[in-house]
Amino acid sequence: MTFTRKILSAVLVIGITLFTACKKDFDTVPVKELPEGNIITIDSLRKIYTAFDTTITNDISIYGVVTADAVTGNIYKELYIQDETNAIKLELLSSADFFIGDRVRVAIKGATVRRDRDMIVLDSINPDIAIIRQEQNQDLTPEVVTIDSLILIDIFASKYQGKLVQINNVEFDCADACKTWADGIGQRDENRVLIDTMGNSIVVRSSGFSTFAGDNLPFDQGSIVGVVSQYDGTVQLTIRNPNEFIVSNTRKSTCTPCPAFTYTKDFEDESITSGGWIQQNIAGNISWEASDQGSHPSFYGRISNYNGSSNVACETWLVSPAFDLSNTTNPEFFMESDVNYSGADLEVYITTNFTGDVTTTSWTQLSVPLDPDNSGWNTFYPSGAVSLVSYKSSGVRVAYKYVGSSSNGQTCEIDDIKIIDL
Image (cartoon, rainbow, N blue to C red; front, side, top):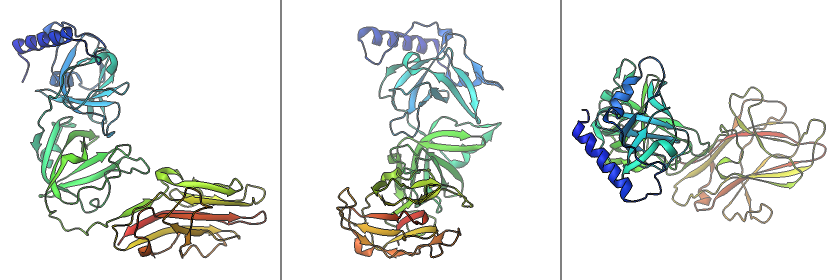
C-alpha cells in the first residue's frame, strides 16, 4: 500500500502545525515542508538496494513507527521502524531517545542502504539531526505469523525482515529451556531455539548487555512478540522485553524440570571478577588471572606465586558474589581443578555473613576434592558434588584461599564453578 497525495499532504500539514504550535525539547531541527516526491515508503527504500550498497544523495524522508528501541539494552545504537508497506532497521551513529510507539520522520540523505549479512539496513543515521518525533503512543499491533512463514527465504531474505511479529503456541527447546536469555555474567550474546507444535524452530538472539540477560527463559508454552532479524541464511527473532512472552499453557514437549537454582562461573569472558567476584590480597601482591595457557581449550582461573625468578610470599582470596539458596531443595557445589608444583593446598571456604573483609568474616572450610596430582599438568579434575544443604539461606558466598611462601607455592587452575539445586 502506498501513501495517497491526500494522506501525505495531511501528514505534512499536521506535522508542521504540531511543530509550530509548541516548542519540544527533543526537536533538534524543524520539520521541513517537503515536496511530495521527496517522501518515500519504507518498501521503496528497501528496493533501492539491488546488489550494491547505495548512499542516498537526495533530500528524501521516510516515515515510520518505532517498533523496537534500546530501553532494555537488547539492541544498541539501533531502531526498528515500520510503516504500512514494510520495515527496516536503522543503524545509528549514536544512541537516541526515541521509543516504541514514536512515529518518526527520518531524513535519509547521506545514509546508506546496505546488506549486512543478508539483513537490509539503513546505515549511518545521525539521530540528533536526521530523526524527528512526530507523534507518540502509536504502538503497532504485531502481525501474527508462524515460524515456517518467517524462516521462508525469498532470494536471500525473509519477507518479514525487520517487522514486528507475534508467534503463538511456542516453547523453548529442551536443550535451552532451563537457560537464561543470554550470558549476563560474561555479557555475551546467546542464541536460544524456539519451537512450535509442528517442530519448526527459530533462533531467538539476545544481548548479554540486556537488562534481562540473566533472567531464566519461560519454561512453558505461550506467545512471543519480537522483531525479525537475519544473519546470513538464519532468520532470528529479537525480543523487545521478556514480558512479551506470555505463558498460556504447559509445555508440550517433555523436558527435565529446571533446577530451582543454577549458577556457573566458567571464565570464558576472560575476567576473574565479572559477575561480582572479589579479590583481596592479605599479604603480597599475587592475584588471580584468567588464562588459556597450555593444552586447555578454554579459559580458566589461574594463580601462581612464582614471578619468573623466585616465589613470593602471599595470601590471596577470591570471593564469589552472594547467592540466595533459601528456596533450594538440595543445592550442590561443583568445580574442576588442575594443580602443579609443591606448596600449601588451595582451600575452599563458605560463609553466610560476609563482612566485606575476609579477615573479619567467619568462614567454614568446605571439603572439596581438588586435583591430587601436583607433579604435572593433567586434564581438569572434577570435584564431584559437594552438598550445600546446610547453607540454604541468603547471602551465601564461597571463597578460595591461596597461600604461597618465599620458598614454594602451587600453581592452581580452577574452572566450571557451579552451584546447582538438584
